[in-house]
Length: 624
Image 1 (cartoon, one colour):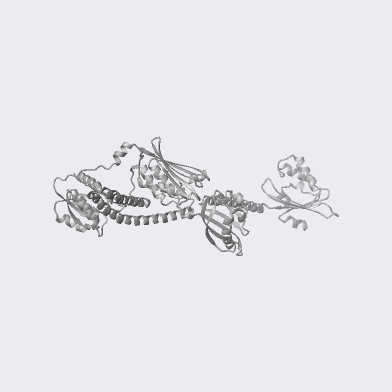
Image 2: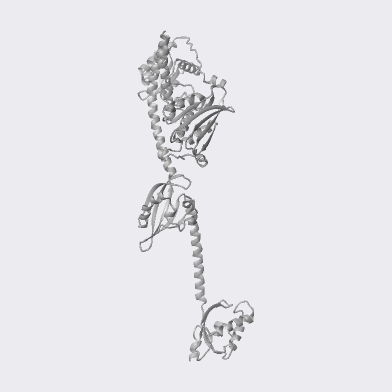
């Protein structure tokens, strides 16, 4: 009954005595182990069964006798053992041996088919391997993405130890991500940065989201403004295991905002300056327009030399100062023309001498000969001002700034030198980058030098900087020079004679009565009869009702809805025989606002009789 029961179990079973002779084997030994009936009878030696199995390939490849010997030696030790092996037919077996009591001797062995279990385990192992591979790919993708994101990303545990950092975050501290892992925040962050960030880190560890901005100093000395966001990482029980860090460099954004603010301020200054210039230039027109004829009527040369001529020169300097103010505020129309470099430098020198502090000596040297270049006068002066102001800011105590002008290989060479703090080579390479500035605390936008370099290059020139830390900086500008003969012929104002064959009528339009008074006298001197109007509406009515008008001299900006451009366009459409000259005390005007922009002459106040005569001659010629 026991044997019958053992034949019905799902496992094979053998019992061997202490001499390794078979005592019992159930029927499953044939089904599961593939043993022939002749080897399943009592008294069969275990070594014969091993030999049968070895020859059948049950133990794999190897020397048959060696395979048998190893197994006999193991069996003779009568030790508890459990092994797994795969039969040639693919069946997985678990072999468990248990020694019998010493009084009996031998051992019993159970053979279990674990093929299904093994398949499940293999599938599980394959699934785990696949999931592991996918997880690694996912981690690699996340790592790749985190390294490509334009932000610093890191993870710190609850002890403020870095467990992860992307390349951008690590690079800020001149490290690799691997170098960051395992280091504390206090070890890696600069003391000032750590002091600022510590309270926010504590909030994150306490489970609170936090964001803050701060200015940090990088290892290379550059200043950066960083906006940082902290997000806690919670366990299932709600406790905090650490926090994520996202740091974004918003330096350029802040610089752009500062630059925009500065541009808006300059725009406001420009508009204010333009309005002031209009009124001031009208005053200068009145002053100069009355002083010139007064000087012609006074016979006392001493009175003329001591009083009239100084007043005229002062008025002319006032006009020059207005032009400089508008140029500095970027309200002056920008166009290149043949410019006397000597005069432009002297203009800047006069302005700087009155503004530089007493601890700075200012020296300006230039050759006796005139040097000309085809450049935008206003932008050139603004560039010089910018370079001199930079030199001033580089001098912390007593110092010297020098501007020198020479001609080198047909180039106008302008050098601005100072003995300030100087710069190293790395800083020199960056100073022309847009938005780069070392004066953020002083409101610097980082645009001045980049605009200066752009202007020089557009003028087909070249700019170089040589600097030594602690000794000063030399900036050299090379501009193409123009031959003196050509420059003299281009810049000389030619007096043109105006010969009116018949009496003609001029319509004078300006809202300032005293300005009209000066200009009326000049027009009468030139032979015109003069009609006057204080606004554009009345001027258009006069054009309709009065015959014989041949010239309109009109201010551009006047009270009312219509302007000088409206008068010019009406004349262009209806009165082709009438010449038009527009005048203005503003700087931001455009001839393109007139329909006949190619033929419209624009005079900028204040102007004298010579410029008025030349403008009228040009207007008559363009009409013909």
